[in-house]
Length: 212
Image (tube, rainbow, N blue to C red; front, top):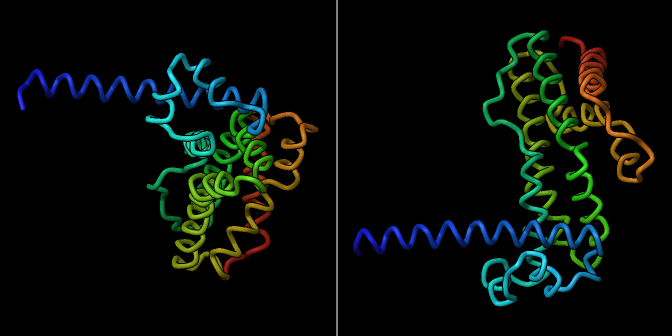
């Protein structure tokens, strides 16, 4: 293959990536404005300034577009893979506070809340949407918490099953906030409130689980 051909292929690849991103942005905007059922592929194609042929070739049908929209935005729920190993209770408190702060800050973002609402609205008719949100976003944060608890347990800082400990910390961290945000009866906490929520959750959690 010639250099010219390679360059052309790369350019076409970049163009397709940009067009696909534009389609997904248009689809998400349409779903949020009109709801999934009332949104047509023609509306999405028009908003994205593409043909329906391009739309189907680059993304797929309407349900596939919805899953792709959810999956793309669910990556905001992912957490760093290189979390520090807690060697003492002070470090454990710091790790839990840092992770808790990140989770609340990202998940309470209006775009993420909109994704949850969309997934809930389509849970009966398109369960794969909720499954995409759960596996792409929520499970990564749950896995990170389980990993922290397992490491703390291995270091002799905690007793109990990592999965149960992670669920307990999540409950302390969130309380009723997520439900209130989904219902639109609470405002998104500011950065100071987010930090305080995470710090308090970590402190209460460690009080409930003194050194073995």
